[in-house]
Amino acid sequence: MNRRIVFGAAGLLALGALFGIGFQGLHAADQDDDSGYTQIAIFAKAVQLIRQDYVDGNKTSYHDLITAALKGMLGSLDPHSQFMDPNDFRDMQEDTRSRFNGLGIEVAIKNGLPTVVTPMEDTPAAKAGILSGDQIIKINGTSTERMDLQDVINHLRGSPGQKITLTLIRPATKEIKDYALERAEIKVQSVKGARLLDPELTGAFKVAYVRLIQFNEPTAEELSRALDDLQKQGMQALILDLRNNPGGLLNSAVDVCAQFLPPNTKVVSTQGRIASQQRDYSTSGVPRDRPNFPMAVLVNEGSASGAEIVCGALKDLHRAIVVGETTFGKGSVQNVMQLPDGSALRFTTAKYYTPSKQVIHGNGVAPNIRVPMSVDQERQLFAARSSGDTIKPDEDKNFIKSMDPQMLRAIDALKGVMIYAQQNSSKGEAIKK
Image (cartoon, rainbow, N blue to C red):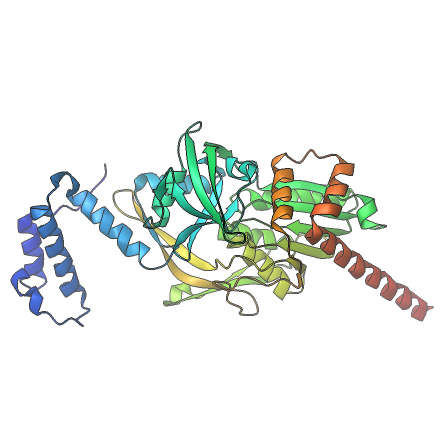
């Protein structure tokens, strides 16, 4: 049974008395007094007055007033902190299990507007051509200007088959467009597109490709199986595609790093106000039988959170070359704490730092090799991904050549690394002789 703390008018007065403050004397309280007792008594008085005198009595239940206050309080802290009622909290738990209903849009509040971090592949949003960075200005004709993050998420979610219209502005072109979408059940497969690239692109080397959609509970294990299979096919180098990966579970991101780094390697640290938030996250102590093959990581503005942790660690530790564009810059830690009635508080408690102590939040991770893409190239890339991973080899090769300069640059970088390694190896053999 849900439990709620309910105050009657007498209870509110008793609350003030408990804190040693009479409501009648609150106006005289020091404006700079930040003691909890004083401020809670002021809050209790405000609730009492609204409950007593507000014109629409059906809007003044204690549950509604306290819920609204909690939403406002969390929303005032930063765009990533929020109050979740019991239904919202259950939805969040479902997200980590790779299944939920909605449009397939990962959103964050940026510059005061709900902004698309990334549209997830094979979802209504991606198929409609929505791109990272698009700003949602209306949902079904209602302005989003005063919506908090949870309100936006609730509007976007719904039962499969329900229709919704989003009005978006694309900052790069200032284009405003309506998108008529139909909600669907979103089943997120973490690892996609694992394959050896066409020899016409890679030359004498076997360069493999894997794309990670997000970081959820099964991601690291799915990736491990994909890498095992690629190794059996003779993989000599790997391109890990984290473009438009919105992140997910921190532990999953650390476990993905463990596929490429030695045991007990620190990949990210957190720093907050209290000692418990000063923490290092390292790879497992269990050794993995995987060669130290050359790697490139693809990133863009839609790479966020867990994706930034992975690319930041692999870059700082000189395990991979990062190619693409600077990432989103969502590098803060949100703790989720459940309340007695099944609701929960999600609030920022720390920030992520890469192994070289670079702060991710607000800055993102800059690539080693910057390769921008045009809006048309991004749109074509989304269209190709939304069509599935059953593209014929010739079509795949031709698409990469014409529409994916980031992939081409990553292939060239890896070929350069392997040619250099071969030359050094040959020189070493000559010296021994």
